[in-house]
Length: 132
Length: 370
Image (cartoon, rainbow over all chains, first blue to last red; front, side, top):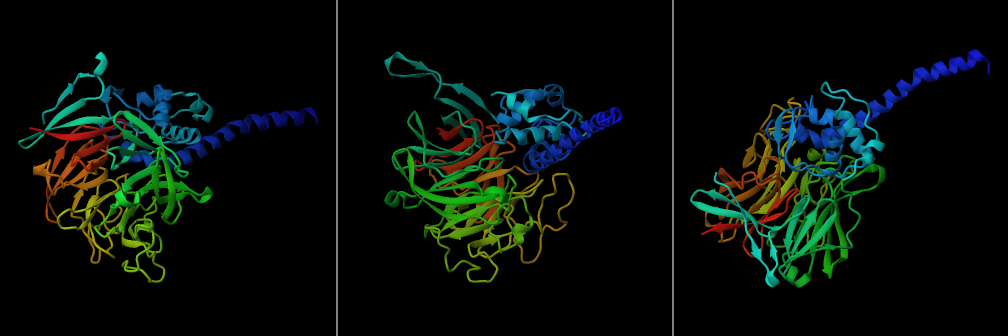
């Protein structure tokens, strides 16, 4: 292969990597949205704002966006006890939804990239590492 | 509402002191004061409860475990079929046959998955031998399969002639509720052995699922017979708003999604219609939704003020709704056990006590304070 051929290949690779990641992220979000609309929407609502005093917001949520591993833990294993989200206290039980690590990653990627939230894709590996 | 938390110190034999088993909380209802006493703790999603003749209690955990509590002992029953636990699905109902003392049958519902087509709700019965479920017979599988993770229905009630009634959800596909060729989104009626009765309202009709007793249901998660009128009632989850208590009559259409008092979760309209000729109106409905996960009627003499009333567990607002009944009519409501937690099931035990299953917590017995 000529030098220019190698250069072209490198260039193409460099350009396409973000697209491949973008696709993977979008596909993960699509799968996550499906799960969200079946299970999470009932409490956290279609706009991700939750219900004040009962169910914490996901949209612009410091708990979700600043401590994603805590949020992953909640989705993966359920959550109990008082938490503070955006300065307000919540004390509802979130039950374990028995989702696979892939499904947890998908729904986390969706909620962290919806309603104005923006974050890199949550990978299955990251979910797998969050231990009980 | 007055609420006092008390921790009782229990002195056990041999000089051991334990702080655990007796946790209780006090409430009042009119002049009556009552308490909730924790009888089984450390539970995740206790979906159903049943009491065996030996006094032990069976509890289903949605993640697929069937637990037996006898005194302080907790054992897991083995031998259950493959259960698909994801989202709202998993091991759900446990109910004894009305003649359990003679035949030993225990009925369970759970969600199953069949490869790529997804799954639905299954009904089985079996007998307990030691800590194993044996003689398992599959009696019913709701149709069609779906890959969604919600709206399984799953609760059972027997009538006085031992016919079995089971509510099955529409599995997230609204059209199923009005499609009588599938069982999803309906209440079905079976013989106790799973055979479909020949006198079911649509039996023998072409393109109609013969097990259907009533249809047009969304996600029916409560079913019970009124102790005095013998009428069948159900509760079901509406979407955003529009949870219902219905009087169930054979062959009738309960309207979902053609009529509803609810809206889509994003606030958009499902339908402008809340009533239509040929469709049944609820006896009572809830806006906003309380998320009714169970329904029972009080028959016990232990709670004279509540006798004949319906108790509906609220998953969403952490209490038990008492629907004050006058015959088959709802006359009003009262919030009981406020802030107890996500109420998954409420039932009367054979000892006449009301038991309440709370998610992420345990089973409470309701006692009147004299």
